[in-house]
Amino acid sequence: MKGLAGVRLLRARLHFARRREQGQVWAYPLLKVAKFFHKVHRWTRPGSARNPKTGALPCPIPFREMVINCDGTVACGSTAQAPILEALIEGAEPVGLTGIWEGEAFRSMRARMLAGDRSACQGCQLYQCPGFEPLSEEEQTSNGGGAPRIHQLLIEPTAVCNFDCPTICGHSFPRSKQPVSARQVTFMPMDLFRRLVDAIDLPIDKICFYNYGEPLLHPEFSAMCRLMRERCPSSIITTSTNGSRLGDPGVRAGLLASGLDELIVSVDGASQATYEVYRRGGRFEDILRGMRLLREERDRAGLLRPRILWRYILFPWNDRDEDLAEAERLAGEIGVDRFCYHLSDLPGMASETYRPGTEAFERIRGKLF
Ligand code: SF4
Ligand code: SF4
Image 1: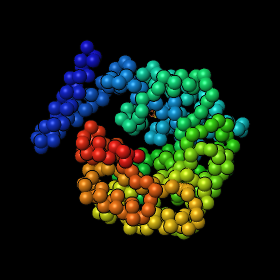
Image 2: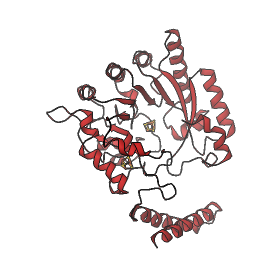
Image 3: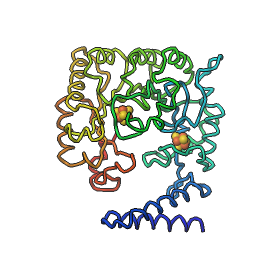
Image 4: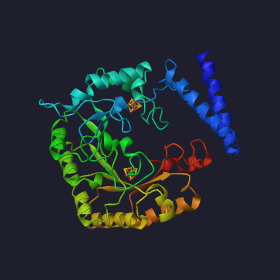
């Protein structure tokens, strides 16, 4: 009976969505109502944490990833506002990362996922994110027996940003709802970071210096990367930036000395006009110039790292063929090491042209982030 209700609600939702697309104004409020009841249904029915089609868990993140916010609180995913509220290194006794990874909070989050209980995931945008690979059998059991290992550790140098993107971390977003308002500090203090580095007592495949905020605004960013590189010589270390600080020679020199493997620069447009729809406050030409200078200085120094990756998030306003062709041309001219696309998963900001399953999507599949 419950399953039938779900199908009916989904049908109603699709029906009103189509009518809305056809410009039928009456469908707007009805679509909202259908969406609401469909969501409530999905969240409340037993076993709702599993994808009804594939049976996959909605969120494999607590099995793969740990996020450390700039104030030292720990979360399971980057948009979760710390549902796992273990303070990393606040206590008098130093805590190893293994103690957290295998501790009560992470264990109970994994158990909830396996049981289909998503009650602790309210408000986390990662719930049922279509980009997730389903969890393998091995992953489902590995944290109960085998040697502990973190696939991806996200470290948030700061939750502050100098751009005003129309999303939760943009600075004109209601302050009370921004992640930065939930943090005890705005920049990760170096003594906290050093204690975090000392707490690493298990293998980590990939360490990402990003979460919310612009990482390169942290005045000690390069020193943080160097310390991490010394501690984890074989991990992949990466960061993601809006590129606004690359015009500063000191920042570029710091990056070249940082030991970073990869620098992801988010540039979602091929001109100032398409770029600034999302990256409000950014200057397209300056970002390109910064990338070019970094690449030239890296080459002159005979270095291979950091590899520079231009990431282009596809939105409805920047997905014309001409935009993509021009961005790829510019990337080639600058000499970035890789150019890739990313599909926006922000509500109302997904490119329809490049929806998974379309012919256009297939054309860029090999260039996806
Ligand atoms: S959906 Fe749930 S388990 Fe996944 S990251 Fe968010 S809060 Fe954590
Ligand atoms: S540049 Fe990144 S961190 Fe800054 S507001 Fe935009 S999305 Fe948020």
